[in-house]
Length: 433
Image (cartoon, rainbow, N blue to C red; front, side, top):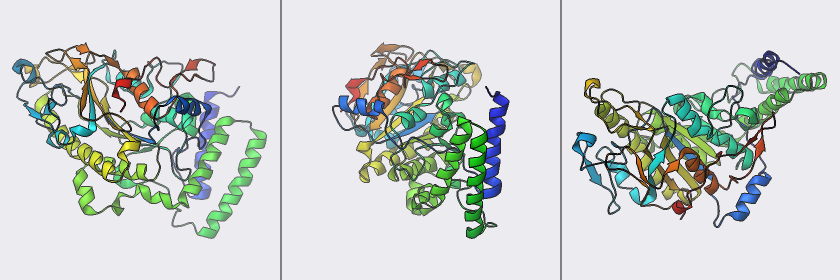
């Protein structure tokens, strides 16, 4: 059995060979191009057509629910200086920091009863993305990787799973392997790096090198029966096809009118949401966009206001544009975080709030979810779930179900251990339109 160090060396060999001989260096971008039996079974059970894509907005750091979507105007000692404002749905209020979101609340299903057992960032984000607790012996697939495995790519000419900003580990496919991993983009305005032929390599030389690489790969595979190396070989064949595809333009947000770019906000998250909309238009199945800065132990109110100015503009505009383009009904827009913040305001930390996994808020819009509704509630101080608790696994199961994935499907790890897309989570069917 090959050692782990040997596996790494082989991966490096394939990657370096592609860069050296082909003039390309794309990150993993594959997903299955054929829907699996699990998706077929789930589709038979679905009462309505499943959603086609997911835009997953990850608020990293622990977004304060009390200062955003679960305001407590009657509790000054909890709410602090933040005021509640009405939305365009009677009876639903949000923070004064979210006026644009308030104007599109009729498109949003607001969950105020989220709860997690993880109060540390790394473990919380791991559970948020993978529905499992981290273990030293295995890396679980992310929800995006499960989507690739069970649903497959919608457009075979373009990556099916993309992450924008945040931790590159969010694009991991874990034990599924590189074939189902996402493409991690550091910045939305940089497009897909290394996706064009190097200027120093002519078209003729490029084709010649492709043929030479193919010969070398066949020789290598004949001598080394290694699944990982074969997966990377397929990766670079896909990379070459993408280089020749007209869909590559989906990654170029410079093609958007200035007015459209400005509407989302001149920042990485806003432009990431714009990119997500473009990618969904071109058939990308799962796009994650990250917005950090929510870890407000110190100066909570100033920090949350600044984060909300970025979030509010981009999020509301994303929903409006998706609807205008006829894509909102087929696209799930999920907005969530690893945990909330404490009701207690820590004066000695310049009015900060600490980690609080017991209760927090998340949002679902489009993709067959009800709009203009609130599900669940926290207690009067925003400290505990009062009604209709929704766990992280339940949240992921709810997304997976609307995407047409079979949450009962069991897939085995290489060691033979059984796993499911949302672990033991149950979909919250009351949210379905």
